Length: 93
Image 1: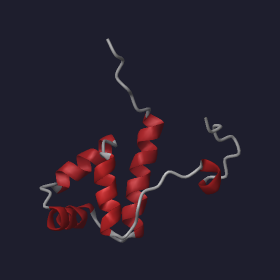
Image 2 (image 1 turned 180 degrees about the vertical axis):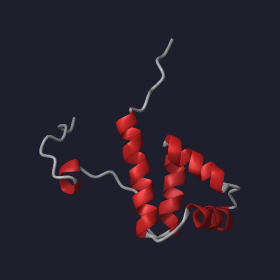
Image 3 (image 1 turned 180 degrees about the horizontal axis):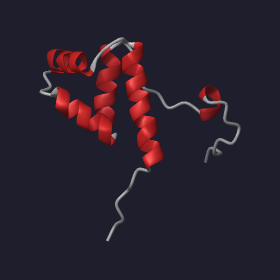
Image 4 (image 1 turned 60 degrees about the horizontal axis):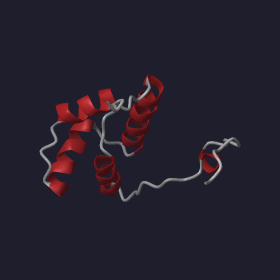
């Protein structure tokens, strides 16, 4: 039996803060975000659905990409040392 991947509480908190901080920077509420997603992508994502995903930190990467796109952002993978000052980044294979 395959073990289910579990996200740590610390990781969930980082995800929640990432999304909350982004929305705050964009000066947008969860309600307005739900309306924008529905208008742009035809998603029926309700406010409660987004709030649940935020509280559980269970956004799909495609959902985060759609949110970023609404504000003309993109999601990229970048080395930690370029954004967080970590010198102990894992070595590339």
